[in-house]
Length: 235
Image (cartoon, helix red, strand yellow):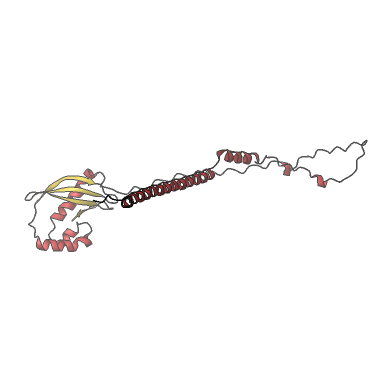
């Protein structure tokens, strides 16, 4: 029986060495990429901080500009100062005193101009606009008119008489015709008007009422108050 030679054990050792070398190279590559990313992020952050600091307004500089602007305001002196170029050039001897200028009398041009009258920016009060209707106001005080409209609607003998008490008759005419053709109604014996309640609806004067009959169950229906004070039934 022959012993294995040393040359037969070399290929497995080389394979393990290659795997270790490949793993080390991969780890080095990952670490290098991470270092590159960290370096790029640091550079970007420094650039952003510098840009942000350069865009900020220095309050001390703004205050100094404001103070300088206050120093350059008009002093209020309207008296013209004499110009040196307009004086005649003459040689004065050291022994001869300089002539004293006579004080000029104040003229109308040297006086401070009067301030113009202030114009008031206060506008006269505007009267409030009338509020849009949202319900029937004081509905209990209008019970008799409401009862007349509701009773006239239910006691009408034909469709035209019902439309005289209906809200928006042109729109509901065809609807009422189709409904009453398939739903004939028995004559109702009017008893009284039950409760009435206002209905909040912006832009309309609406309410809710109950019609009570002697030979049928009560009927609840919507009503509307028109601008002339009359009432219509919402069919």
